[in-house]
Amino acid sequence: MFQSPAIKISAYLEENGIKQSFLSKKTGIKPQTLSAKLNGIYKFTPEEIEIICGVLGKEPNDFLEARIPESVTQ
Image (tube, rainbow, N blue to C red; front, side, top):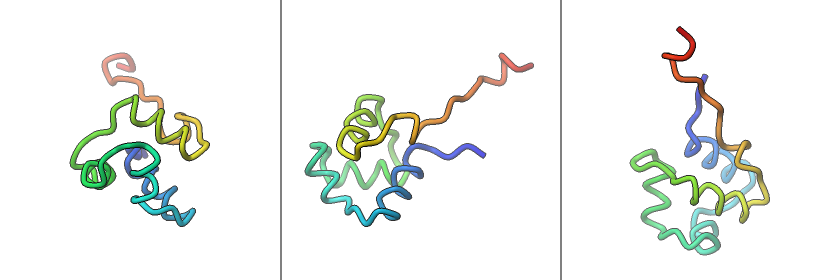
């Protein structure tokens, strides 16, 4: 089942006791914007995911899933 990057990042933060305020400061993403993106109101840009991965010491593939469009599989 597909999980959005927001869900995966939120889970990682919670599992590792990392506060959104820490991530906001380290990434330069405003706290309100980060909260809205983690809650699925807005989507993360590829650049934001790269920055978040850099701060957390993770790879983008840890939070992204390859998806094949349905039109290709039919």
